[in-house]
Length: 121
Image: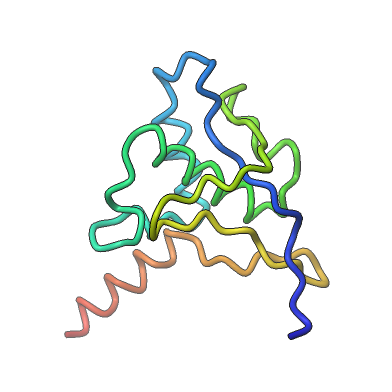
């Protein structure tokens, strides 16, 4: 209740482009965005290439409030209104916030928290 989402838009990889460097762009996206669903045990772990690239692109795009330039990735990104979700792997649409702040926690923070838990145990 009282929750507002951004438009039903996703950022996916443009299959009409040379994707030889797409993995580098996905790694850059995941260094900022939450790509934890792509990790072992995650709901998108079995997503094949280039679907996993699209997941990374979309996570970054949503974290940046669906701004057009956040789906560039050197021309490899493409905004679509067709939900790219597959089975249990849901491509999320970001919640709107009053200050435009992201509600997603970066994968870096997830890793830091995981390391802290392992270290303390």
